[in-house]
Length: 119
Image 1 (cartoon, rainbow, N blue to C red):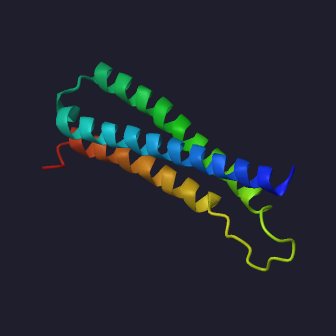
Image 2 (cartoon, helix red, strand yellow):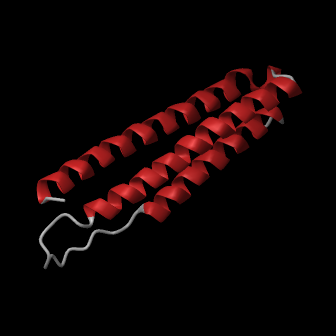
Image 3 (spheres, rainbow, N blue to C red):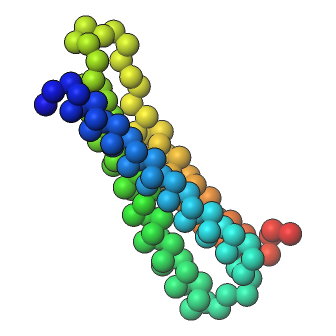
């Protein structure tokens, strides 16, 4: 692969990563807003349906974001001069921790709304 193709592919992967992460945070925001507005009024069946849809959507998008970023990093680390001493830091693990913490935090928020701990 030429240097231009590698740079173009890397830029494309960054765009895909940003799109997936944006959609992930949109899904999380929609879930938190729905939890705040209607969380106490949901029946157990409705809550199970909402949580199942959220698990599937946010889990898939969160995992996809991390995997796309890992792929982006693999190609981005190849771009540059061969003797380049500035090695980029791999943020895959911190990103995965962030995605997981946001996911667990939103579920904890729904739980606190259901238990009446949020005013």
